[in-house]
Image (cartoon, rainbow, N blue to C red; front, side, top):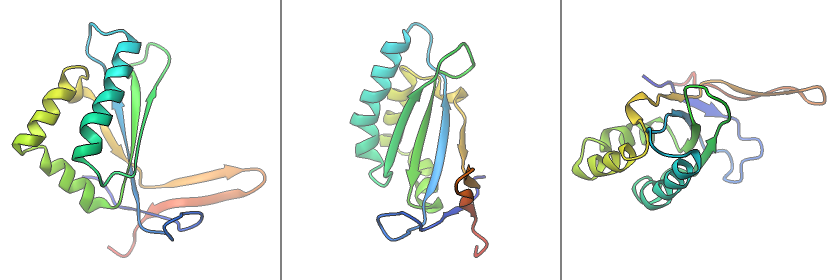
Length: 139
C-alpha cells in the first residue's frame, strides 16, 4: 500500500497544498522501436490520461537509455493519496478497463511497477539539505 507524503509549501504556486508523486517504471511491448513506443505513450497520455485523470497536475514521461529492464519512467503528481486510490479503483470500471486495454497495446503494464514517493530532499553544497517531502505524521 502506498504511503502518504506531505510536500513542503516552499515555492509552490498554490500556496502549499499537499501533493503526492508516483513513478511508474515502464516496460514496452516487443515489436515497437523506442521512438514508436515513446510516440504512442505520449499520444496515450494526451488522449486518455488527460481526460480520465484530470486531477493529475503533472504527467512527465521519460525514455531512458541502455538495455535495462525499463524503457521509461512516468512521473505523476497527484493532489493526495485519496486521488491516487480513487484512480486505482477506477480501473475496475468499464471505462477504466478500456483505458487499461489501450495501455496494453504498447506497454507491458503488468510488469511496469509504480512506486510512491515518501521522502524527498534536495542536497547541494550551497543550500545543504532541504527536505521536500516526508511522511505525514498527522494521519
